[in-house]
Structures are given as C-alpha cells and as structure tokens.
Amino acid sequence: MIDAQMTKFIRNQASQMEQEGRLSETVLQYIYDQGLFKLFVPDALGGNMQPLPEALKIFEEAAHVDGSFGWLVQIGSGAGFFATTMAPEAVRKYFTARDFYIAGSDRPTGVARKTDGGYIVNGTWAFASGAGHASLFTATCRIESDDAEDEKLYAFAFTPDQVEIEEDWNAFGMKATSSHTIHVEGAFVPVAYRFDVTGPHFHFDHPVYHYPFVPFAAANIASTAIGVAKHFFEAAREHVESKKAAWKKEGSNRYDHVNKILEENEARFQKERRKFYQAVEKSWDAHLTGGSLDDKDMEIISTRSKIVADAAVSGVQKLYRYLGMDIVTESHPLNRIYRDLMTCLL
Image 1 (tube, helix red, strand yellow):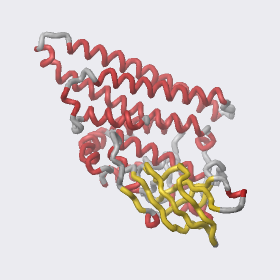
Image 2 (cartoon, rainbow, N blue to C red; image 1 turned 90 degrees about the horizontal axis):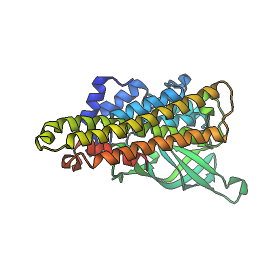
Image 3 (cartoon, rainbow, N blue to C red; image 1 turned 60 degrees about the vertical axis):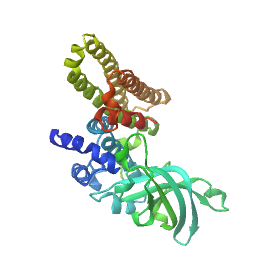
Image 4 (cartoon, rainbow, N blue to C red; image 1 turned 90 degrees about the vertical axis):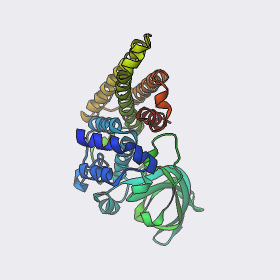
C-alpha cells in the first residue's frame, strides 16, 4: 500500500521530522490521500475500512517505513472505534473530514460538571499522540455530581480551539509523534459530544467493531513493533555488509560472528511473527463465521502479541551491541529505529 518512492521519501525525512517533533506536511497529506488514519472508519463515512488482519499488515508496513509514521497510523486508525460510541451527528460531522485524526487519552484525569445542554470540562491529559495535527480531541473524565448514577467515567470530544497543547514530548523514541500533554479549561461540551467507550450503539457497524477489544489493542501494538523490528534487522544487515571489508581486514571473524547473531535472532523473530499472524487469522475467521471467541481465544492473541514483541526486542538488543560505535549517535538510522522500538512497547 505504501509505494517504494514514498517509503524512500519518508525515510529521508525521518531525521528532520524527529528534530521537529512531528510528521511533515507532505507526509500528512500522503496519509490523508491514502486514508491511512481511517482504516477502521466505515466506508459510509468516507473511511478506508479494513478487516483486522489486513489492517495489522498495513500497521506493520507503515512502521517498517518509519516508527513514528507507523505509530500514528495505528493510533489514528484506532480512533475509528469511536464511530460506534459517539452520537451519529457528531460522527458524521467530524469523521468524514479528509484530515480526520483524533488525539487524546483514556486516562480519567479530567472533571466534567453538568450544565444546561451539556458539561463544563476541565482537565489535563498526557501523551496525546498526534496532538500537533489533530482535527478532534477526546479524553476521559469523571462526572462532578451528587448523583450516584453519574459516578461512571465518560469520554468527551473537544474541538482544537478548546484545547491547549503543551509541547512537552521529549521522549527517548517516537520523537515525531507529537505525543504532547493537552489541557482543557472551562470548555463547554454538548451532551451529544459525551460518549461511553464501553457502551457501543453501532449506528455504524462492521465485524471489526465486535472483535474483543483487549486482544485487538494488543495486536495493533504488536504489529507496529513487528514493523519497526523488521526495519531494524534489514538496516542492520546493510550496516554489517558495509563493514565487511573493514572487519575482514582486521583479520578477525567479527563479520561472520555478527552475521550469525543477526541471522539467528532475525529467524526467531520471523518465526514468532508467522505464529502471531496465524493466530490472528484463525481468530478472525472464527469471528466472521459467527463463532464466539472465549477467554482462551482472547488469551492466545494477547500471548502471541507478547511473544512476538519479546522476540523483536530481545533479538534487536542482542544484535545492537555488536554493530559498532557508529550507531551510538542519535542521527544514525539504526539508533533511531532502536529507540522507536523500545518506546513503542512501553
């Protein structure tokens, strides 16, 4: 889905985007054109709806191009689930936009007080990935009320003009994701823009919305980590080959030794990657044919997600220490890919 020319362009821009802390406008326009933030938005809303296994492969492909790019494609698409929980009028208004992207947080660090026609919301939420280009923000609040029925948590949607972005994302990796803290102070939110993420209404529907959420979320992140790790192994192979003559000239077996470490760890990673996708495909097929996914089925996906992530991290860690001093600088591509992988799985 992501052509070779754009892959080359994004990778050439990666260092600059990392320094600027956000994706470039050209890359964002490409994402909008391809509908990469809309992989879980229904076609009726101008989305690019994908079956879960296909979406995971796109997440992997995007993360294989660049970690920050892949992370935002995955996080941005995940917000498509709100189409089943927000009021239809709000969904039609915001989800159909070409530049649709929701940034926010599910941490209940805000407070909403009832007022005529809606709520007055105040709160601060950290790690809102994509805050720098969001067309809408969502965040979780507790209701400030004496009514016991209002003790549950709700999510609220805010327009960009209601949100102050504190540009504080100074992370180890995924630096171009603009995952900043957001502040909302005294914002009025109509009742229609309050929603319950645990109570879908399915005015807009698709089989992916009925897939159990816990394994769904685990698989999304795992596929992103797979893409970053795949990029690391490929870049490491190019790096090792570029060192072949110098290492051979040393009269040691360093080239053969490092190559062996690379091949062994990449092979283990690829084996677990295949098992991961096999488990996802099996569960998805059962889901489509009406078979219920019990706790054991959900645990298999979550377990496979953890195993492949572990294979990615442990393999990259074992290889990293043998690649030489060149890669210790932040500007080196392998350094950036490594940092992205470690940040992705925190």
